[in-house]
Amino acid sequence: MTIQPIALTCGEPSGVGPEIAAKARARLGGALPFFWIGDPAHLPQGTPHRIIHAPAEAAGLPDEVLPVLRHDFPAAAIPGQPAPENAAAVISAIERGVALVMRGEASALCTAPINKKALKDGAGFAFPGHTEFLAHLAGVKRVVMMLACDDLRVVPVTIHIPLKDVPRALTEELLLETIRITEDGLRRDFGLQAPRLAVAGLNPHAGEGGAMGHEEARLIAPVIARARDEGSVIAGPLPADTMFHPAARARYDAAICMYHDQALIPIKTLDFAGGVNVTLGLPFIRTSPDHGTAFDIAGKGIAEPTSLIAALKMASEMAAARSGR
Image 1 (cartoon, rainbow, N blue to C red):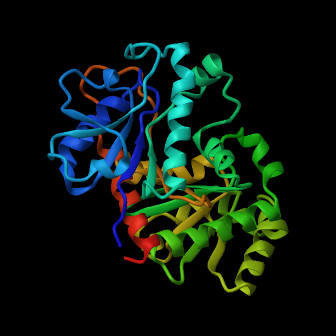
Image 2 (cartoon, rainbow, N blue to C red):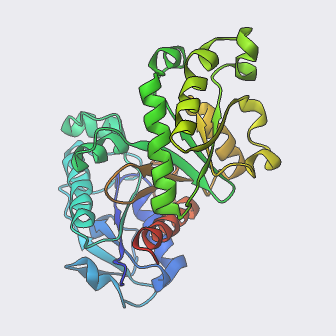
């Protein structure tokens, strides 16, 4: 079975997206086929590229040549200064990538970073971020954000909300669905037949028997027990401060964390440059570099493509796993 190339959306063209796309192609060559959806005028000057008219044309090009599925933008890309008139084109490039992967013309979707404020200001973008927009396009009610590197996979149950709102946002339904979607994703996209999960507590020392909080006994432990009854291999609730040293990490395939920083601090400490953002629960594979548009260094030629390369490689591995190869 032939695996189609990966679709890489341009993201915010005034950020580092075009630069790291060109650098990723230069380092990967044709060994990992992908094509870039964007305006060729936004690529760094001198980037070897070729306009393609269909994803299949991305295969077989010279290693140094970036395949570009042309997606014209109305304005130039000035580094660090997003143009409001380009916002709608950023959104439509994402929509185009989703359409291609949903039709099977691309094996996976990899998305370069967007700037939510620029999209909201320029095009009334109504979604908190990429993930929610992709779920909307796919017609999926709930998806899960996973951050992954070679040494760790983490899933935050709650994401971009104030810490004070986390206890109220945590529900049995949310936690159980997060566990189920994570397990399904590990099986389907990572080839793990019996994935092992570890669930963190919310409070210090996982509540210490109620001395530091009751969410563990009242909510988290009952959900874990229910998941075990359904066949899950799952441990917890565990104190988060002892979950991420090497011996602890060896006992699970993914850590379910209660809030954003509980998940992201350990993975960014372990592999700041190589982390990958994966969306589980979509009908297609989606990865993204785990960084933003980096307006402060855009256009300076110093942006590192390490996380994008990791995201492309992980997308390729997930596509192979999903196809049974």
